[in-house]
Image (cartoon, rainbow, N blue to C red; front, side, top):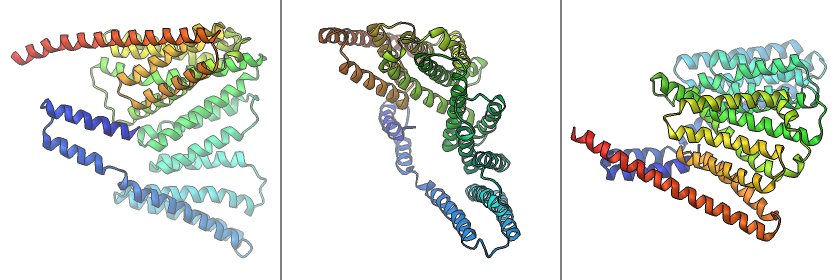
Length: 452
């Protein structure tokens, strides 16, 4: 995530650890040297190679198009097949030689040739234009290459093709169960790949497909039920909040479950990296929704909370989010840090639901501010700069909106911010006292262990 903040914090922590004798000066110097040189230069060949592969694929497509009339159609088709087979053969040789980067680039080239070949075959045999069907076939071919060879670039192509198919298959508001099930199958085929073959870009591609697939289901479903515009808005807000809460809590529940099983979770594994990426996306969405629900308060005046919550996409994620929160609170009854995590998520869900249920701007504003402060505290507790940054962005948007909108009067606005400031100062004082007591209770225990 935010590497600059991570490096800055690591340098500060290393100074503290050296002073306390936990890390030697030589070891700290090696660590600092490693993070200063690890600036991504080792990835430059792959980046340049990837751009080169795309250029070569485009050059071949342009060459065939320029000589379209002079090349027999079966020669064109045989040439496309030969290039795909040759690229996969090169990928197999490079993989056996231990050159994983070259193998990935060769597989990506074969995938791009397959994509271009789809369009050329349509022109060769004068097939009717069907971009949605073409995107679906491209997705299947790229998925086959990604899983057979472990190619990360092919997985990205598959995710982009699946997103293109989802957004172009039909108009919103037309519910087709078969197509929704096919979209779910594509998501299931794409999502485990970054877990088995960890990569940041493929994780974000899979997350993008998840959001598009869920959003398409939501938009297809919402128009079936005849509600007013306010209820439509409420359904979208509740669905987004429920989905983000699920993404945030799933990794924490899995972490607690593994700890209760007796094994420390290994964060380097692909499944944990995927869960952490899901948490990042969830925090970003939830912080945005908390700010949005306050700004759109006037658009929710006539919303029906029961109808909105009973919409299948919203109900599914809300029930799952509440179940994860309950399980998390039960598993974390001995861990105050984890209880704070699930408590903050629960408070955020309440802050999203309350504006739909009632129109009390002062109470809603206070609850939204409290929820965003809670999320920022969770980011601080878990040393996650991205989570804190998302909550701060939401807080900034809310405060700017409150400054623009007068709560009753300027005097009422002044009183509101005065109360909010006093509450935050009180929270800071309580947290300081709790941390001091924890340090004081930990010192005698450490002294007793040292004496024994």
